[in-house]
Length: 277
Length: 277
DNA sequence: TCAAAAGTGTTGGTAATACACCCATGA
DNA sequence: TCATGGGTGTATTACCAACACTTTTGA
Image (cartoon, rainbow over the protein chains, first blue to last red):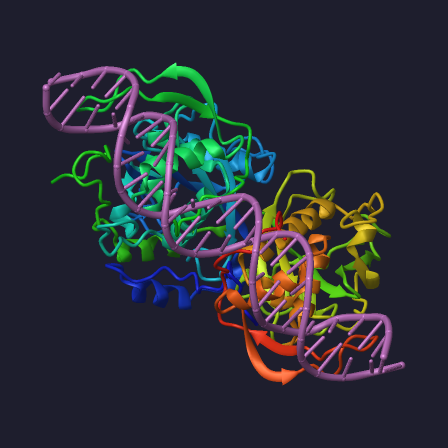
């Protein structure tokens, strides 16, 4: 069988790192799998924002088992029906937003999209867990609050996780979250090419230079400022002029830039390709 | 330096320490997997092929309630663990292939990719069902066999389901399968643009004209034959020459075409855009 | 008045389209 | 030998990267 571009065929195994998997494995070998409940369904959220010209992802340090002490994506069980934990989630995106709002307040306008679903038999040591991953893109948000299951929470620059220039080898996240994050990074990079998604990282009014900053941060490369400017304005529906000017020019002086808001278009014609200037 | 909650302080890097495997062992020994109300997890498969220049989708007519008598995508419950029904599915793609092979034998090379997961609270009248949808692209396959839950099974042209030119209003499929099929159609149309996926619909050796037939069938439009030919050969890694010729020219005579096989490339540079010739 | 940033004009090279044309084969 | 489909040549057109240049602002 061919794997396909999006082939989800990894082993989903939490990789080693500083973590002694042998002990956990020995313990699990003695477990009777038939004592377990059927699959549990969770949502995990890759929330991305841009701070100081660098993409950041929202992570929490797990306060409880399993994988206590490791950094993980915000997530939680889908509420299949009303229970003591709370009312049922009407749909999966509701569950994703619910677990995310436990960590950070959200603005009215955010972008939420499904990334994929991960269900390898050994991805969670407790039982069979099927996890639906979502990606959220948001403008710069306040620092997160800690939740019940979280020792600490933070916006972590993705250079610390193995992405972008000057990236170190990358820390291992809990479960298969390293892989989920990798899929999100590639999705975000790719969607900037042919959709107007970059505006999801920006406040309602922004300059073309700020928009270029989003592309440069996510793609990890510089772009030709003058041609970028023209290309954006030549793409119908990408941005529309507010008629206003930014409060001030650059730090060391400079002309004040025009402010734009997101236009109606979702798809870009023509696309902005990564390979070109 | 202390790893503060504020990700902007210090290098924002997640701390490596804090994970304790022994402690985790103790936790798992006392863990009750029934603590979380599970949802049922199913896979549904949108299998697409091209017959007589028209895309077809594999459907079965439901022999049982609910939605008895309606056409539905092949699907079934994910086997979370070994049981009387059979061994556990190691991963979700395995489950998708399992339910598909109940309907039709599969060739060695098929393309399988995840489409998305659907989990609205009312999508199945019986209970909360979370369904992971997969898309399979295959060369022309034999007629399907009926399964336990299926009255009849057939490859149905997607003009009968509301897609392509000359489409009628479209039959209603069971559950939310109309929406799942719609997502698959859009995914297939879009992926032909920037990936080499079209070859998944063809046998191992094919002509450029047959490849163009795939594009024309899926996109529902004609393409400029001469320029298509050149464009394919100019895209590195899309196809490679077998050195052979097709057995015969067209029905009414004609030169014999060269045979190609799929090249190594997954992504097309440059892409073939729908909007152009 | 200088430096920095925003934004515009221009141009040479490249790629895509449309169309003309030749090649090979079956009837 | 004609019709049909495979495949190539080429002029025109459209686009795009590169760079020069003007405008506007802070220090």
